[in-house]
Length: 250
Length: 233
Image 1: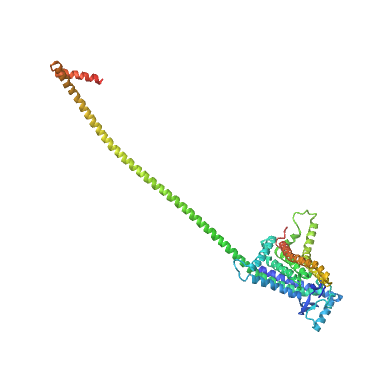
Image 2: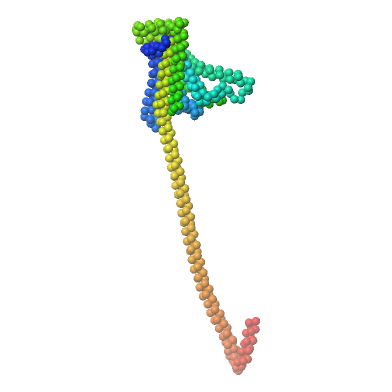
């Protein structure tokens, strides 16, 4: 048994595929989980809607609810014009949600507990905002940083603050998800080690181990909440940021 | 549709750009023999022996000691993660935007349409039933009006007939009355004309009985006339 709480985050290479200038694009457990998550999402949603029934069954209801949930979220945040981003937000939500929840299963790998993954997703969102914003509105997109109705002597400071806040978005977006996932999994593992360590110390230790054991149960419930909540937060913030790309004026 | 394509392409480009960035970064980090350098050495070792199937990236020895540091911050794994993330998320985006979301959207739309159609049909039926109700009430009112009209007409006709009958009857009666009156008056006149004769005769007879002589016709008549005229006065 590996009693290292960090061990669960290790990327393990399964197959070496390609190496470009010293960086390996090998197939790892992270890759396997990414592919598995995509497959699970697609297969579930396809299987759930196989009947296309007028009155939905349980699984079709889940598929429809997730669709309507994200659709409403995007429409509320970014309006009807923002619905071009509906597939993106839906994919992001489902990807993060399934990654977070699958990561709670023991012996699995949590891809969202890697800063590079969350950063890439956050940069994808902000990149989409910037590219779509300039493509759609041209330089008018820069009005995002110039709120109307601000006194002219305050304007440079306000613009500076707006720019900094815009630049901090990908950082906060990626760090929030990463830190939540990482901390939760480490906490779970630490309490698990308490159980193992205490119960190896005899009968009294076994009794003592019940306390951290129940802590694991409670923490697992909390982590499930966090997993769902962080996926939701990620999707909501994505919709709000995308609103800036659609409606740059304040 | 073209919009989603453009977005897909943009997402793919984004992923590639992200995948390329750390490659450059770790490239520059290599000569400084940091964690990335260790990784490369270890990777070479793994490739040459081929002994480990599941090998820890960025870790020299399996079992606790992390030469690559804290795994989420180990840049040696970034390239692979980003590449696979770009591939898997690109595939997910493509599948969702092309297959799954239109599929669910169609189901919801069909249901929405069906509900809207059913509601429209229901409201149409209700309108029809309301129209039928109105038509029924109208027909009822009309029938009632017609019945009233017929009854009124019949009453009027009967009234008129009765009136006519009454009038003709009254006329006939008036004629008869007048005839009768005329007859009475002629009878009365006749009777009255006889009164003088009778009075004269009676007076002559009475005088004859009382006196024994019959007065002259002329005197009697004048006396009777005198009395009669006094009485009449």
